[in-house]
Structures are given as C-alpha cells and as structure tokens.
Image (tube, rainbow, N blue to C red; front, side):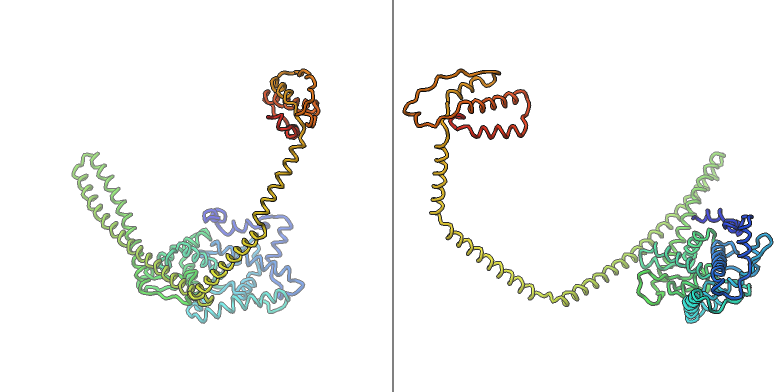
Length: 510
C-alpha cells in the first residue's frame, strides 16, 4: 500500500480503530468483546485463564505497534508518549484499563524501551550489546517458556509516563533503509554518503512504510540502531550536522568493523560538490528561461533598452552555466575513474584468488608435466598393442578363408542356378506375341492355334498349361487398363500380380 493510500485510509487514530471488526459495531456481541478487552488483566496468568489472557495481550500489543508505526499516536512513527495513552483509545466513555500491563509486558520482552534508556545504552557499545542480549534473546525466551508452562513472574503495571521506543518498528525501518542503499550501490564508493543524502534516503524509506514523513527523532533512533548493529559508521561534523559522513557496510563484506578513510572523505566531498553544482545548474537554466521571457515582454512593450539589458544578463548567466556544466563533467569523470579503479582492483583480486585456487588444485590433485607425459606414453603403447592385435586377427581370418575355397563355392552356386533354369516350362511365344499386339482391346479372345506337331527340337521340352498363361496375361491387361484410367491398384493386388509375373518364364517376357 502506498503512503498516500495509507494516509487516505487512516488519517487519524479514530479512523484506524473504526476499521477493527467490532469497534464500531453496537450489537451485544461487539459490546461484550469491547468490555472484555477494556477490562483489567487478572493478577496472574494461570493455566485456566491463559487463553483469554493471551488473546487480550496479543490484541493490545498489535494495536499499539501498528498505530505507532502509522504515526497515529503522535508526531513520531517509531516511538510514542505513554502519557494520556489510555484516553486516546477511549470508546463510548470506556478506557482500556490494562494498557499498563501491556506496556510492562512489551518492556519485558524487549519490544519496548524507554527513550532515555535507549539513548543511554547507545552511548556505550557494551551497554547496548548487554541490553540487546537480555532484551532480544533472554527475555523473549523466558517469556515463551512461561507462556507454555503457564507460570513465571507476571509483569507489573507500567507507570504510563514518558516516551518509549518500539524496537520492532526501529528494526524494520533500519532494514528497509539498508536495503534501499545497498540496492542502488554498485561500487564501493556508493556505500559512502553524506549525512544529508543519508537522511533523504531514510525519509523515503520511512515514508514508504508509514505513509507520512518521519520526525528527526525517528532518524536519530535509526542511526543509533544501525551504528550499534555494526552496519553503519557515522562521523559527524561538529560544526555542521549535514556535513557528516556515513559509511554503510556492504552486504558481502567480511570486515568486522568499518573505518572511514581519507579516500571516503574525498569521495563524499566530490559527491557533495557535484550535488551542489547540479542544483546550481538547475537554477541557472531556470534563470535563463525567465530572462528570455522578460526580454520578449519588453520588446512587445516597445522597451528596447530594457530588452537588451535582459539579453545581456542572459548571456552572462549562460557563460556561468557553461562553466558549471564543465565542472560537473570534470567531477563526474573523476568519480568514474575512481569507480573504474575499484572495478579493476576487484578484477585483479579475483585473478589472484583464481590463480591461487588453480595452483592449490594442481598441487592437491598431483597433476604435473611428468604425470601427463607418462600417461600419454602409456596411451600410445596401448594403442600400438591394439593395432598389433587387429593385424593378427586379420591374418588369422585370411588363413581360415582361402581363395581356393571361394572359387569352389562360386562354381557350386552356378550349378544350382543352371538346374533351376532347366526346370522352367517351355513357353508358347506365338501366343504371347499375339496377346501383346492387342493389349487394350476389351473382350479380345485370341484365336485358337492349331496344335503344334511335335518335332525333335520340342519333344524334350516340358509342356505348360495354356490357361495359366492366359490368366497371367489377363491380369497384366487389367493392370494396364487401370493405369491408363489414372487409378492405382491396391498394394495387395499389385504385390499379388508382381508375384504372378515373377513366375512367367523369361522366354515369354523377352
């Protein structure tokens, strides 16, 4: 949800409370719910009252945290004043009587800390670390155990005075700020910012979450949290708070602590100067536009001298603008060279790490020139042995299969073919020719030839039935007629005819 939608939805605390399911309802069930939530907590939490006790505690903890984060409890979005807190949640004459117990419980679990104690702890890293361990680790752990067992010391009622910091909100805002800065940081120099730029980044991150501009106190709370967590180092300028230097720890950095160097200060100076020059360039461009309009107005009014004055002023401003742009280009070039040097340094570091890793791998794997040469010699010997084996196998096969035996096999195959030819029947060539002369005549019946007289040449031939030849030739005629009409015989019929044609003697087909 954007900040404008958040403010439109919850412009004040009353509108936020009205969004709760039962707050604005007037039925008996809603009234009973409000009476339960507005009543005091029992003197102690036991196994019998644990469900109702925890439900009421979770409700008020959630409401206080969310309302504070939306800036509905005061001018801050990370802290609130406990004074008159009960009257802010007044409903139809009723005020919640258990808020003191809720604040005490939040302090015990480390979700809430008085502002004075927060600033006091921030002055000493040891004090902050001790508070962080006791409040963020030990206290929640003991509280969780007490919730399970139903025992443990119950929180005393809070005094309900003074400003208090909501730690989960501070942590959430600080992490969002770090994410914003690191997302736009592509070089090491991008992790160094001026204090004014750092505050602008914070304002955008906090406003995107809360829907309103944070206060200066909110900015101080986040600064303290980030410094004590080790993610940010701030060097303030006692003469000018906006000239401080902020260094953000990169996400992949392995450094245990941050140090602001002279290089960092130089980079911040360059960035601040470039930001100032950009602002001057924008103002000069606007000034040129205004002078041009004024000169045009004077010309329309016939005031030539005044128009010339504005034109001369425009030329002077244009000259200043050109100088400022040249300065911007120079500074941008310097920053670009710094970033290029950073990249080259990182690449060189990667080269060094890669070469060390390669050397270590070669050393651990035993990969040496001698080992490679020995392996290649073994491979050549193995290939030579294999070639000798193949040659020996070929010689053995030639000895087994002699050329004389191949000639005998060829002769035996020719004798078998001759026997098959002698078994073929004698074909009536005159009938075949007569059929061939009339291939397309439908219903043609060839004349019956007179029986041939046997003679010496044909007496030894094997007779063949005439009706077999007629059937075969009729099939061929049918196939030709189908082909002439453009039809294609089926695969089965063509195969059958081909098989029948193969049975016709070569003498008939010649």
